[in-house]
Length: 253
Ligand SMILES: Nc1ncnc2c1ncn2[C@@H]1O[C@H](COP(=O)(O)OP(=O)(O)OP(=O)(O)O)[C@@H](O)[C@H]1O
Image (cartoon, rainbow, N blue to C red; front, side, top):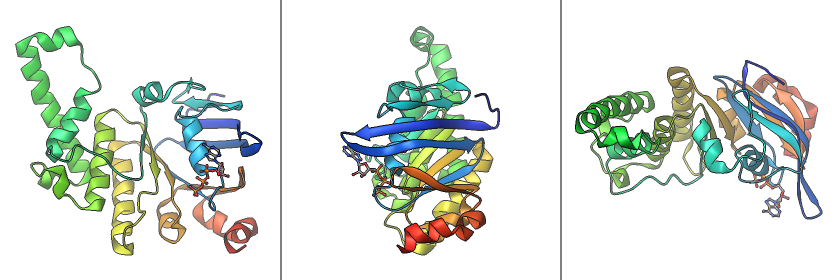
């Protein structure tokens, strides 16, 4: 089961809701530093798969390996603290705090040694380092110019970048994004994906992205899994998946 290239391995995962098989023996792998895309029609099982991988739901069968560690059945906060974070469709930073304060709050939430934090000199040194780190992260996501803006002044795309910045600040190695371009116009949507690709390279992290707007998302993906009715029906590079007749079938009916 050890695969040094993979940040996430889900193997033979099965999940039922009552009599409904939401996931039927699903296996996926997210390579380190990749943007892996999860697509498929409504009800295919994409969200359920991410919920199982991030500990929100427990699978009936199968195992989840994150960064070489078996995390099957771990609660969400433990998965999060290991560096697998999930941002939700609606980014929810603290709206009245500035961009910088939001990122600092996420850095501090990683929990430094409380006794060490009580010592004033080390606290000041830590705060200085935290601010430097926060600016590094803001630069990576392209928000450094807005560091003193209150979060409520940001646009939808910038809020998504702030959400990613907070995940990086919390030590994310893999970020699961749920429809990152949902509700944005095409030029904005493309720039969000361009940013995600750049962040992936600059911050050396991986992304697992659910997206319905495949016309836009496929261009930016390294690898794609196509799900339908609880199963992975195709996988490969974007061009391989586009050529797969099964994919056309589920999308065109
Ligand atoms: N908590 C739940 N209880 C019962 N059934 C559920 C639950 N969550 C999901 N389902 C069902 O499981 C199946 C897979 O749903 P899921 O939300 O994972 O699909 P999806 O691919 O993410 O769809 P969408 O693109 O519409 O979000 C669907 O039939 C859905 O109705």
